[in-house]
Image (cartoon, rainbow over all chains, first blue to last red; front, top):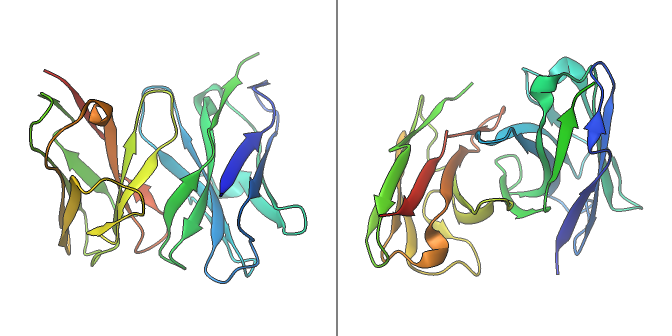
Length: 121
Length: 107
């Protein structure tokens, strides 16, 4: 059974750095062709892809947030960590991690439940 | 970036109806198009990948078609659990992009 779960703070202040952890089970991020990505969804709005890291350490980022994002993986712990610096109220959203399959043309076949992160002073 | 445009943005339908949602890419994406269903307060679920392949465990009432720039998701007979929002996503190139969503509600 494949599961993913997001963890981290639910409330951050403007200018702070958000660190989210995705802990997964049922697959290994050392498997060729797999990746884990982060996506978000502001309340009432559409999905937005943020970042993805592959089994071979290839990292991809949304250009609009590239300078603020970092994604890392710890294969031994089955975890992927996302950091987003300089948080702003517009970054308030549900944040999801998801497994990317399909090599370099990924779909997201398994998702975490998501967590709402609110940015407010 | 490749822009994904869905239509309609919302529709009303009844249980048993046949529903069709379209997605248009701003440039050629071959068959690198995926469809998701999202129920309120829940994570999205992958329905269709590679434009027309049914994800494991997804009911056969869902089907996808198209290639190039124009794609369609069809629900052959709407069930209660299908009242939700649907998103398309292109995976041909980074950044990965989603359509704006189509909300299907009860007529």
